[in-house]
Image (tube, rainbow, N blue to C red; front, side):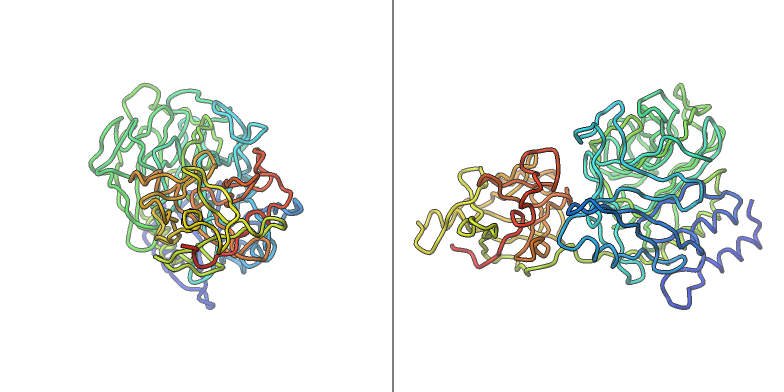
Length: 506
């Protein structure tokens, strides 16, 4: 237990700024350790979670030559060296292959293997996250989070020091409060070592999303809940907990902690303010949850049985030994707020103006007279010129709109079919009428960046940042370099995903 005097010293330490002004002096895990509940897992792609940590944060792999780079902090206790990643991944795509454990227990997170649900890779493993899908700044310094699309997941089934059985533990995660869905399950925390559902009480993990199959909170979601296996709990038992609010902050702090016959859910805006307690009390009365039967694996972005339909973004998180006090968690929240998470641009390359008309020309040798167009609902490429028919010019022209699913990016409305937008469905680009659903909005949102070939712009799918618009056999896809589909082929990938954007024909 942290005494009042030691807690006050810890808070002074946690809020004292480094001379460079980069981050607070004490990291979250220093604070947990001072409170007697040391971190046994500490994961972050954005910063060091100990004041003296200078080691590996995460590893990326680039597609161009399958080589690796380990990203470390800029300085002890500091922000990740995003510039090193940007240089390494220039003119290619990169994936996050390892998220290292900073605690010294070796609880690193790697590509999740198949389990009760098989992953989408050809070997049954889950996808890996794009290395640059979730850019942010911390105290003005650029870093990258872990953007989890459906089918993406990380795991460690052979951990050290993680709570098992009914042993006490705590955990927090900093997440993107606006990136979620109702799929099962965007989790971070304690899960089964077999990758299968072994029964109620065999998990204890943070869940974030708006799934309503089990528990719900106030409003329409999303909510911070606890995945205890076979149920998502918003409070004491399965069902509704009015004290668990819908989240609206861009960055959120989510906390779940448990000990013998007691557990809690807490949360906050990760950019300002203090923690609130959404539930604190006895374990659920439903069979299997008291005592708990935790197994000690660690998951990120998936359910305990490798359920892979959820999405979300993870920036940092830890797991502790023992049940942290509210006072210690208050100091950790103050540390997170002092890190000053903030958004940054999702786009680069050719500047787009909302409301303007554009056309997009292929840059691949032999295809430079072809433009992105549509033929009915099919999005394809067509040879278009100033002498083409008015109808074809209209089919190859698109009106730039503010991104339906994320206002930091763009959507593209058909010039000749008002109300219909380019969207991806099963990774094929289609022209569909806007149906007003969250799924459509996300599928129709794209983030241009400087062309991977060095020419023009490459158009990335916001919800699947490993994937870019690609022309392949004159049809259009969102393709992942080296992925499992034919249209993911590596040959001429950079050229095929780069387009020159010009004033629209129509």
